[in-house]
Structures are given as structure tokens and as C-alpha cells.
Length: 481
Image (cartoon, rainbow, N blue to C red; front, side, top):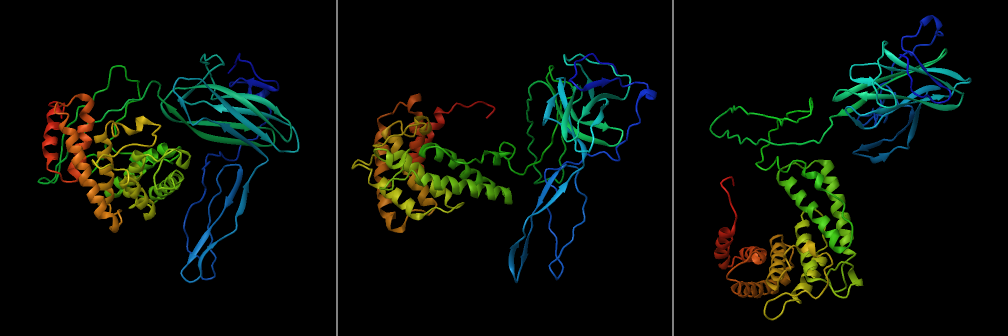
């Protein structure tokens, strides 16, 4: 195939249908290298009585140095770790295809092939990209090029102990995985590599679900028909349908919930906001029996790190603030948040009981004689509070909820239970008195009404039933819910 694109110095493009009589006799590769795993071996084996084990396997095609390590467990001698051993896979002439993780169908990809020459002489290398139905050859401007032969060949002079690259502009034509085959031939040596190229569709990916409840209480089988339609502007060949069956009614909604696990960081406010989702995700996966060893290890790592970092924002009086002892005072809201979160996390990771005790003691001393909790400290990220500190009743309700959650998780010391219960009773009285002043609940007081109702419900205050009815009246519902 004759090309008109510009080539680098020392590189020439050879027509794919050139006269074989003018071509020097080139060496063909003995095999095509196609196995390039990131990890070679990860397995268990049993040793003989003398402690030796033998593993026979084929080395992958990657030109690299493999580092091997192993450990052994014996019920009598315990645990042992071996020294690392290295295995180098190398050949004096080889090529490497530089590929991105994925490409978009129809876009131009400049396929780079790198040639490594560690031979004793300079080599005139013929580099060929094989033609297939999934990719088209292109010039540098993206214009398709017709190829009468089976491959596109470029010739490059590679001096000894040096590296050179050649470039093939191509356009992927089909969605899915395409095979890219490149061969490098010389008179004396040759190499061939095959790599997989992931081709994704153009446009923007959109998903939608069709939930189908299946009730097998009275029947042993279930059958139904589902009408599946696609929008008129759907990208051709990009459609796919996936069917999954989950024995949890909200399982599909929360599928992939483990992806919400994250490392905590930031100030005392930001760190805690990132710490709490790890607690909830851990609890949900545990209840639904979806915890794996990898997820458990990740949860343990994130909870431990988040807990330790949060302790750096504890103040000498047991309270917490965004910057610890650097702030003027501890925050009532943040300390209640810490008390509630640590009490809930105690089932998943170690929480020092003294930290919870000191936080609870600080909050007990923040209640006024009227039962109200006030904020004397500073909360820098007001958005994190939502409406939990929008009024004295809201903040009081939030602290009461924190105490109740700590009690439910058995995290309040026994010698503080009586004082905590007394504090909760005074707080509920203040909440009830505050709500009486807002008989006509406007939108600005709806959050206050809801959080106060929740606090009163946790404390089993009779008023909570009437407040719940009021919330249901305010609810905006449709026939679809």
C-alpha cells in the first residue's frame, strides 16, 4: 500500500503489495507473544516433608524482571517468609506496542510500536501492522487509506543498543475488543506481538432499569415478558441488556455500594463526614452478607485511619472542633456528631471508651437549665449541618439523638446513664415547648419539625405520634409512590 504521509528520518513506508523479488529474505518470528499479565503467579501449594515445593509454569511474554516472594505456615514451626527471588525475561530484539486503556470508535489512534535492538549490529527493521476487519488504516489527517495487501509495512534503521519507534495512524471501526498484530522482521531476527484494544462507542452512556418483583412464596417458577425499547438516537451496536437477580428489595439501588468506601482526610469536620459513610456501608454489607475479605480489609483500614485522624481534633476537655486545640472552644454540634458516629462505629472498629465518655461528659455540661443545648464553638462548614443547627430546638434534638444512638449501641458508661437520661428528659421538654411556638409549620421549619419528631420518637415521647401525623400531612405524594 503506497502512502503519502510524512515519515520520520530513517523510516520509510513500504507498499503492502510490493514485489517480493525486490524484498530481502526476512526472518519470520518463531511465535507470537500475546500474554502480558500484570501479575504472573498467585497460588497456594503444599510442600513435601522436607519443606520443598515445585511449580512448573510458562513464563509470560512480558519483557521484564519478575519479583517473586512467598510465605509458609506450619502448625508446629509457625509463619515464615522467604527472601525475594528475581526472574528476568529478556530477548535481544523485541518490539512493544504502546496502547491506551481504551479508544472511541471512529477516532484516530496513532499506534506507536517501539523497537528495541540489543544485537551486536545495526538492523534494518521491517515493521508490519496486520490488517483486520475491526480497524482501518488512515493517514495523519484521518483520511481512510485503501490497502490491497494484508498488512501495512514501514522500514526503520535501528542502530545497535538503541530504541526507535514507528507510528501507524488507524481508526477503530467496531465496538468491543479488537486484536492488534504487529510484526518486526530483519534478515537475522524477528518478533511478533498481539495486543487487545478496547473500543468503546461514541456518545454518552445512559442506563435505565426495569425492576420486576418476583414472588415465589406460592409458586416454584416465574415467567414474564418485558418490552425493551431504545431511544431513536441510540448509537448503533452500543446497546446491551443485562439481567440480574438480587434477593434484596433495595439491592439493585445499592449495588456497588462498596465503591462509596473512602479514606478520610481534611479538618475535623471534613474528616468525620468522610468517616461516617464507611460505617454505614460496613453495616449494610454485613447485614446483607456481602462482606468479602477484601472489603473487610478496606473497611478496617479506612475506619482505623479515619478514627485516628479524628482524634487529632479532640480538645483537652473531651470536645471536638474543626482544628482541635487551635480553636477557641469545642463545638457542641461536632462533638455530638463524633459521639453518635463513634458509637455506631464501635461494632466495626476499635473505639476507645474514654473518648466517648469524655465527649458525652462535655455535652452534659453544655445543657442549660431550660434543657436547651447551645453552640459556643465554631462550625466552619455550615452546609455539613444541614438543618440540624438551624434553631435551638434542632440542635437540642441533634444532641438528644446522639445520646440515644450511643445508648442503643451500649457506649454510654454505666455510671453516666442516670445523668444522661435526666439530660435527655430535660431536652425533650425544651423541644416540645419550642414546637408549640410553631403551630403553623412553614417550609423553613419543616426540617426542625422532622428532626425534633425523630428525637422524640427515639425517646418514646407520646407527642411524637401527633407530630408524625403532621409530617404525613405535609408530605408531597403522588400515585406512583
